[in-house]
Length: 430
Image (cartoon, rainbow, N blue to C red; front, top):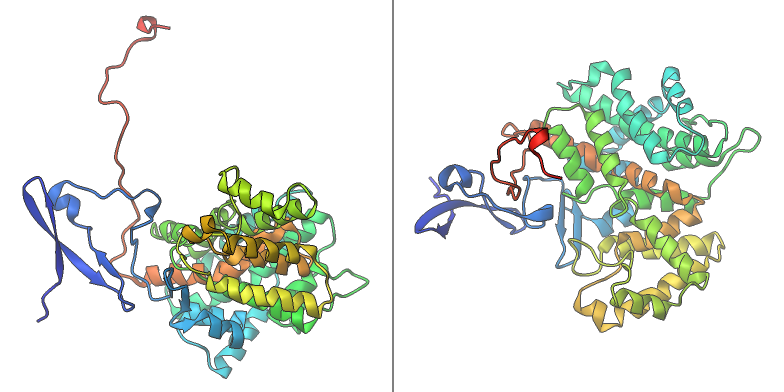
């Protein structure tokens, strides 16, 4: 029988033994789950920067070494050899699919692309300029009402059906939300097209002219979605897990992830990068002035630095090459790419950024790819949501299978008033 490895905590003259948990990549954690019961002490970690909320086998990030792996596969290999749909299957089901499995799942995606006609009325309820993220989160949540048989998933077959519905319908809802926001007629999905080609068709085709994207555009979109598919316990993923811990259904849980992703510091970061580059290009300030203003802490340098990565974000390396190749093959002269490269070079040669380990992250180049694909700024977080859907589903499912899961309920350190007595209105002083 193996002996449980422990660490000791000394406080107020007493010693407490804390179990040590080791991950497969050498990560070490102290299990403080029983600390309050034993000692009355809790841990305080604002922003959960140093707190492990769960164990997970889905993705691995080593920020010190610039590593990202999905189910053990390096992101660089998946980016070069895989596709978004295949990678989604890897994340959700645990292994790369066989040809038969990939074909079967592709057919399921084709079958599930359409929306219930009654659901179409939801789009009519939003104002013409309604933000696509508001529409996306609301309609995804509404899918639960149209699939009551999948609100309490009990079998792998039911789970697979729910997965196909979400992965397929999220692109339909995303495209329809865009069409709604610009007042154009809805373009229905075409089952003869691939996943990414079908999305671009629904986005940009018109009744009298079908949009036929180039292979390079389809590949770039697939790569964009692939590198965003999962990133362990980020804000939106943790939100999905927290909502799911109450045994909320899959549709409601991933809808909560969309709402979390909408924030400027999460899914809105790549659009902020493009806006910053536009300011430089339009002459509001030069690259040098931008750098100096950041150093004076007048504003943040968007697209640089990461909560986890202390080296170059591996996703940024992949997307940088993709952005340049896409612009070259489409013969697009985007001045923002030149500005981005100039800004990157300036920052990477400045001691202020070097000492703080501020390197370009995934948002720095992803916006340029979306611009090249004619995706408008207000759709950027929607695109992020499409890409992140497999990760959210995978984490919800992994947690649902863990028998020891408890509803998430963080503690707090109270800093308000101590007990006071109620004062009647007439006795209160102004």
